[in-house]
Image (tube, rainbow, N blue to C red):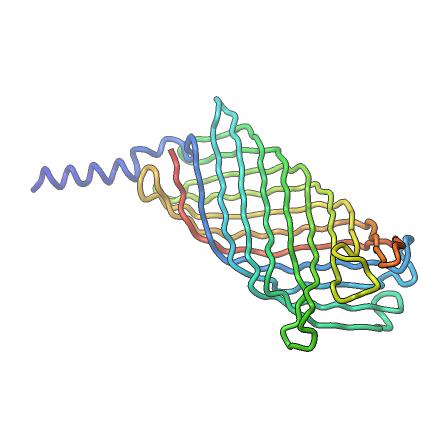
Length: 296
């Protein structure tokens, strides 16, 4: 009985203590699923100089939410060189959309308002980069990365009240550009670590929309947007090791993306192209997730 107890304790020691040489392993794959919620809006002015009025039309998506699936890989490929990649995709389940047009500056003299829904579509992102391991020991790690990322949105305007049953307008956006990122981990208890990361993205923003019920516009592309901007992503994750190779995780992430002024090109059914100032687009939200880590 004593020999069995000693053997059992030795196994537990090896699982939770003996293997913990470096807090970051040679290769780590994280898989998670959870809930994501975000708000998004854009607006345009009346002319290319941002005037007449300074806000002519504004679209706002609020509380757009749905299930999110994510995967992330870190791999120490050679000496202190590490490569990194992540992918996540949210399947939109619900959200509200507000469309407002104005005849006066600073959102005065409204001439149109419409309230709609968004119960389909998706948002997704993919990032890949390489980094240098500054620190990686039993208690702490610090790894900066540089890379390139792409984030996309496929948003909709639909009418669930039945007043406009054929309404199926779309807005598709892309945020593309380089990023810098820092990942760090600290051991709280022998089997428990806290991992955090922050990333800054410098991006080019492009989008296209289809207002499917407006006959004066071309279809399937009624207008295009283009601007430059930036994105900030931050996340924190608790990771609890079950064995040398398997751990469970729970995480929280926050993101905030914005553009400066750009341009809007409107394609009319007559073939004419009108150009005006895009005042900017903004996209922010959070996600809460849980999953597993697989390492070696």
